Length: 180
Image 1 (cartoon, rainbow, N blue to C red):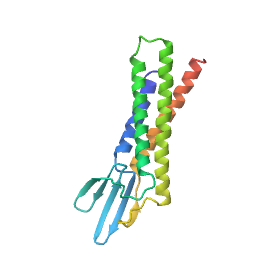
Image 2 (image 1 turned 90 degrees about the vertical axis):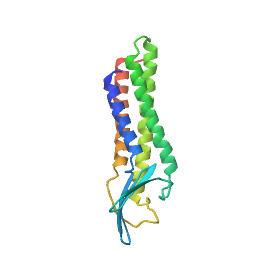
Image 3 (image 1 turned 45 degrees about the vertical axis):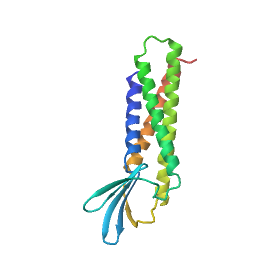
Image 4 (image 1 turned 60 degrees about the vertical axis):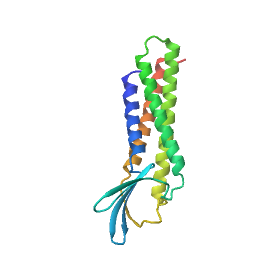
C-alpha cells in the first residue's frame, strides 16, 4: 500500500466524520404563526434558527424518524471502520520489518475495513434519503414549508462512495500483483 490508498481513505474518513457530525441531514425552512425559522437536523443534535438567534440542542428523537437510533449506530460504525482502514494503511506504509504474509494480511484487512465503511455509510445515507423523498421525516410541532439540500447526507454518502472506490481500486491491484 502507498499514499494512493492512504489519501482516498483519509478523504473518505473526513467526509464521513463531517457528515455524521454536522446538522444537515434534514434542512427545513419552517413557518409557525408569526415565526419564520430554519431547522437543521442532524443525527445527534438540532439547530433552530429564527430571525434573531440560533439554538442548538441534543436531538432527543423529537423528529418522527423510523430508524434514528440505528442510523446513529450504523453511521458511527461506518466512521469507525473508516478510521481503522486509515490506521491499517498507515501501519502498512511505515511497517518495513514485517514479511510478505503480514503485509498481505494488512492489505486484506484494509480492504474489508473500507468495504464495511462504504456499505454501512451508504446504508445510512440511502435510508435517510428515502425518508426525505417519501416525506416521512416530519415533526408534528412544525409546519414544514421548504426542504433544502441535505448537505450532511451528501457528505456522508460521498465519503462512503470514496471508501468503496478505494476498495475496488486496491482489490484490483492486489489481485493483479499477487494472484495467490
